[in-house]
Amino acid sequence: MSNYPAIYQGFVAKGIPESEILPRENVFTFNAWRALGRTVRRGEHGVKVLTFIERAGKETDKDAGERKMIRLAWTTTVFHVSQTEALQGGGR
Image (cartoon, rainbow, N blue to C red):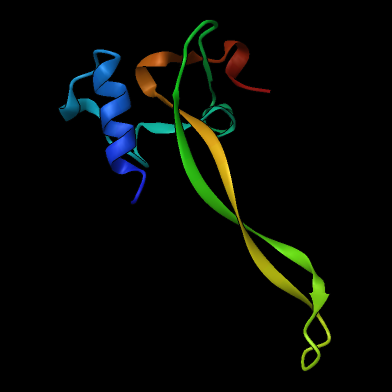
């Protein structure tokens, strides 16, 4: 949710009306669009957002005997449905 202002601001700047911007409904990453049977058109530029991923760290938790999880900041790019088109041949 902390990315919503950046998503709205970025797509409004691209000329997409705010009422047509629905994060998690019609705004996804390149790979998410591919999984949904769509691809981002060549030359389209998305909006960069910051997200966090969890990854096993180098330190081991002495009690559990497992590697401690750490959170890393990660940037990704999201695209609006209007920047995509259906994949030819129905997908992969």
